[in-house]
Amino acid sequence: MGSFEFTPEVIAVLGGAIISLAFSYIPGTESKWAQLAPQYKRLIMAGIMLIVTAVAFGLLCWGVIESSIVCDRAGLFQVIYIYIMAIVANQSVYSISKRETAKVILPTLHEYDPEE
Image 1 (cartoon, helix red, strand yellow):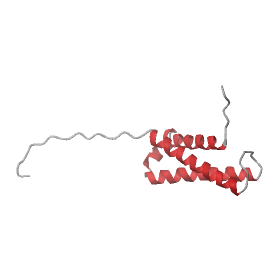
Image 2: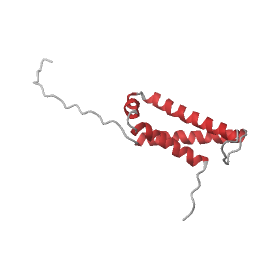
Image 3: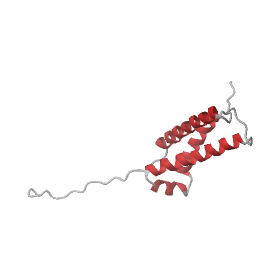
Image 4: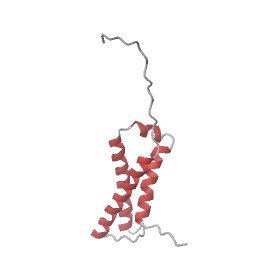
């Protein structure tokens, strides 16, 4: 069986998916998260992943962490690409994860009035 390599792309995709699942399922966050409008949810997720990506790139450039990404202009474009992949993974997982169930409102029967 072949080996699996944790590339920056794989880590970003997994991170995006994990963040989405965390906000959907962790007690305490799920109820607050469910109350937010969809556009705010997307902005918050994108913002969290942008912060994580920027911090990781900064740590890479300062030599704190090692990666195959080089700290130059080409590396910055690679990080932007990875960020977009993380957003795609995040929103994909969100679209198939836990949803609130719709309330079913049964119709009521009333007497027919032809003058209505």
